[in-house]
Image (cartoon, rainbow, N blue to C red; front, side, top):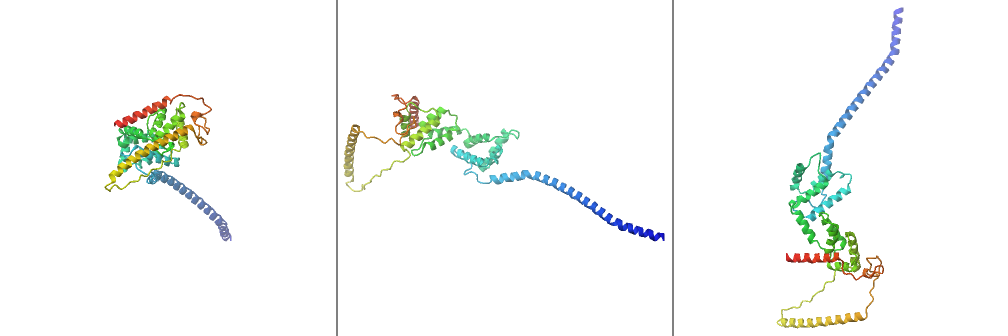
Length: 349
């Protein structure tokens, strides 16, 4: 009777322990699975970091190449380019750099972009120059690259000569306002070692003759000592005199000279023209005399005084300044003398 009872007890004990064992085994399996999953996730993360580190330079180079392949400038610089083309080339690059300041924060990015904007055949010249003059510890700056472009165009030795010729030949066009001419002249002067006094006298000497005469009359003994004041006076005089409007062109009537009497007719026309010109001169003299006797009042409402910035009078008749009978200032006379010397020099050539 004792054996069956023992078996029954064991069966009952197994029935009680089986659910507990199943729960324990399931718990252990879940813990093992969780640890395995965690280990796998850590290994995957390490592998991802390694892959991203290895691929990062490739991605940066791909982005750089994709950006540079775009036509960012209108012209590519080559050794035969002029100074004006180089200045326009640099201005277009500066506009690109200013549009993306974070992208082009470093000089190396600027140089790389400008390198791909050089002519394809002459890019190795910059590579050779950089390898021979700079190292990775001391790379070239953007200013160094700009200076190299001066030596790049036309061998560098003729750059100073070309720059001097460009500055010497720079003249204000008849219908060009002073601001536009100032900007053009300043783009040349920025590449030269020139003082403020030379900038003032050079700008004045290169203006058109009517504007120079008006400035001499308006400024008199108050000739500006810096470029900005002279530019302001030139703009004011330009606007007051309406010098930007072109003069109307006169049409000439051409007669047919195929008839046998054309030669005689031309002689008669010449004598008539001379008589008419003499008559017109006499009429003008009579009108001038009448005008002197009966002077007309001129509308000065649109005239602005350079001395007090008020309207209604010229600077030489300004009530705020004392009347002086001094001649043109020495600076203006010196400029006039420089003009005559430069003209005589150009004529001799």
